[in-house]
Image 1 (cartoon, helix red, strand yellow):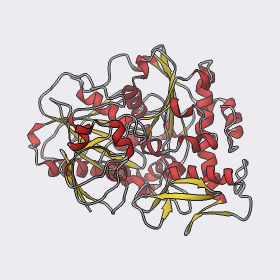
Image 2 (cartoon, rainbow, N blue to C red):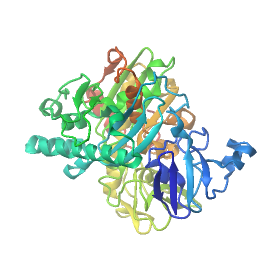
Image 3 (cartoon, helix red, strand yellow):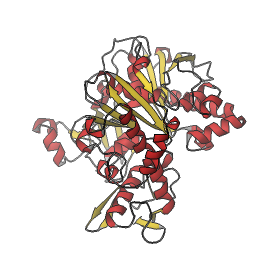
Image 4 (cartoon, rainbow, N blue to C red):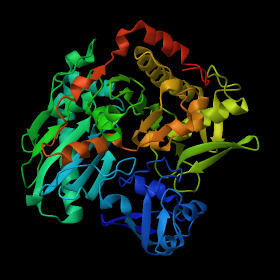
Length: 499
């Protein structure tokens, strides 16, 4: 089935019965409530074709709106060829559906989020905040390893220039694709804002890595960096300034600064927390009184890395697992037979294994060394251990931040889950394995909040972050705290005990 997405003009293919959410997420559509059908943030209008209303649609829209083709894309399944209008792109919308305040400017700008695994870029109209085009793809540095440690090792072994060239040429090609898809004039491009973790920044800009790699893991610079695209070797018809937003500490980069900007933690009257659960797990806790940030080496398990049948959240991946009548039932992205399992499916599968007694709280598989999820997909003893390591790193890190603030998880009023994995993660399963315990009412998926923060910076008149914001954010170095190692060992258990 062919689906044309307006106002981007992008055309994608989908299988009959495929969840529309899976199709649109790769184009940058965000699902603020995590696909629960509560917020209407993912609403679309069917311009051509047919999309039957679901029960959630009848609750969300009036009869007139339903007749006009309004639907919740998080609940829809593809029935045939479609042309749809994504309401989200009419103006820049935050997780709470509040438009970003900005002073309109002339021309176009580009916001980029460089993740360890994926890279996302959006072309924006600076006068309206409207997203004109989106491109996403794998980080071309993946050939040097799935995690930041592997890439640093290669860079320090003499391959730094190759890693820098890979990401810069990849970004150059992505920007070219943005303009080719819209045919907007290059002369209108004014500026670019970029966020990413500290290692992505160092590798892109060619900074030495030694002091970041060695304890106490200090970034080469904590200042916002400005370069011209020509200086970086981008092959564009124009040369424009690029701002890489500042780092916040060792292994805490501008991506988590983007999350802080997007979720407005520094404006909150109550204690809130946030986590971006990628390969490099970054965590935040605080309020308008100040924010504490840190990072943990979670590894790539949350993104399907180092898992025997692990894969990205694409067609053929088991994305959800539930227990029905004493056995596992799965949801496969795109329908059909499963080819592998992605991060959210892995968390669900281990939680289901615990519930069925197939996996012990220690992580040991009860019988043999494999648990079949649905043929031919199974998880191994090593897979469970990889998830335990990732889970323990995040859970211990969150506990450390709260202890440093003299707080407990009961004091946290909202917990924001950022990133693609956080947007699809089953909260109940995460709590069953002890990843966190804030409850579904306090846990709020916020999609690619890092990219949203880059857009906020891009749309500001100065093109960067507000003055003085870094002084209100404090970095906590977990590796220097013996207490973290104690908590890490404790959190290896797969249970929903106290945080």
